[in-house]
Length: 77
Image (cartoon, rainbow, N blue to C red):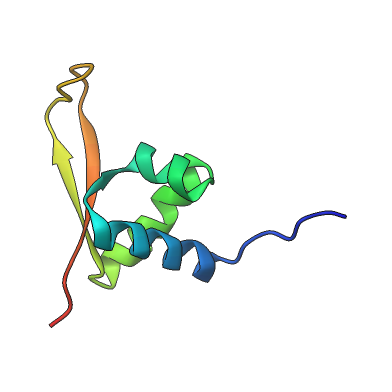
């Protein structure tokens, strides 16, 4: 039996649930949500538009020295 694809809403809910716990990189979200990088980018872009999250650009990673982006949940008032 083939597993059904998750909806965009289900993916967004999972992203928000994870980000409420801690700030994460896009790659971390990709592995925790178990979806591809492009899907994460698309969903994060939409969540950022509606002010649910904030994307932070970092100059370099302590691990590999490359620039990266992390995402933080924006607390609702």
